[in-house]
Length: 231
Ligand code: SF4
Image 1 (cartoon, rainbow, N blue to C red):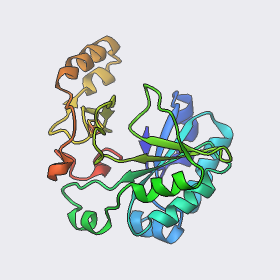
Image 2: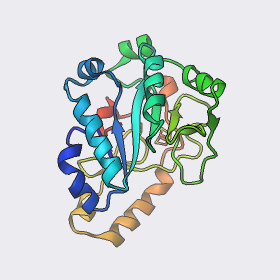
Image 3: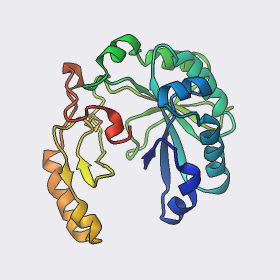
């Protein structure tokens, strides 16, 4: 599940009881003032405390997602490296993607992924061999660090070649690609616990799953902004 972590502390026990085994939290800064400015909420200390509770008390796998922005990239990287020293967490930078509502910010803040990867490779981090079920991130590990640093670079060549992702929005719609032109309602299957019907429906979608996005043509499909689906 992807979340901004706003209610992590409140819901952690029930999410764990429901069988959640992996959580991706969006957290774009380790600086409380910057976090407040970006999100509108002054709750970075609470989020950090709640994530530490998750790590200490559950076996839910935690990944943190952060948008790679030119202004904060290096400071974030230094903080992320400190953060994963003793925590089995993957901190992933996601290259800034242009959607319909963010063109000005995109052109002001878009940074290439090598700003991060060059530093890592020069400082003893090594590319982690990817498994067949792994997502689109290239992850870097270091023998002295418990966690990893990841990079998701959607503008890179062949980024979509091994895509194995479907996403379900909080409205019960399947997105076959983050940047598809439409989505597909599966709510009736979910509401009636109709597992067989859901499996059949999902199989029927596979032939029309897009092969790749069209971000290079400034086309983000129906994704006006990524908060529509949570990152
Ligand atoms: S096909 Fe779509 S969902 Fe899959 S990796 Fe590419 S952009 Fe992401």
